[in-house]
Length: 342
Image 1 (cartoon, rainbow, N blue to C red):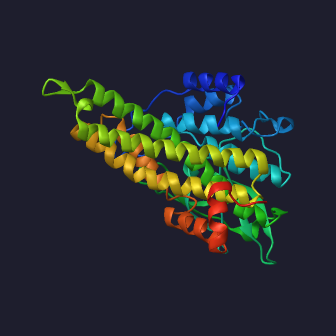
Image 2 (tube, rainbow, N blue to C red):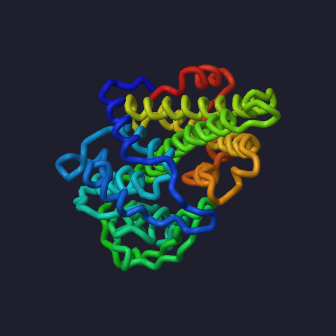
């Protein structure tokens, strides 16, 4: 994705806001980084794409992509995507006000429950989308104290809590059912953008280590076997990045209602999901035992990208969606080269 001078300046600013990696140790639950969240709020980054008339910064997905990538590269413990691109977006779609708060979002089932809701225990409110009895969908904002929460975590020990809401006590605002599918695509793109940021950081760690670590009188990066590992890792990271850039470009050009955009997001989720396995394996093989220690930064990123690839749809489900998009074999090649129309 070609960056304008403004976007390059924005990316430089983000590199100063986020630092590479936290001091989280394996097994410890990731705690919400309130000082970082306060900084993001002061800079208008907590609601980067929100409407300016409602307190947001009025930016688009190009800027959001840089923000999410920087957050992913630094293993930032903040719900930047959930607060702005999911919860804030749902509230704006429902015509509800978006005041200052820490938010996350969830789609409830017919029983009012949702599993693996990110950052729910640390949120002030949860914006919920649920099916009504008359087959319509509704949106409401629920205070953390007004829902039942069971704490849980993902592989990276990030909060992924289960919630239960008494929807019969909520009035909510009726919204189009199409928001449910858009929620899924938005969530998938958020995770992919954070993942490619983390992949970039993993590649940096591997290159730094293999360039500095000396065995038998030379840097291990000079050995052909190690070079092959690093080359495969770099190739997978570049493929995931290219697919993700294409998905962001599709969103900017066509919006989420377009079949072209949905195909591009599915392709990005598939590519990044498959890449995660190769990147984690090769990174650990390149770093050896040090990469498995609690003190080393690698596990913070490796565990995250392995966890994130299962959120908002599994890798297998995205693979299947890509294949099912093509109705017949005559349409497959144009689909791969150009993407679907519409």
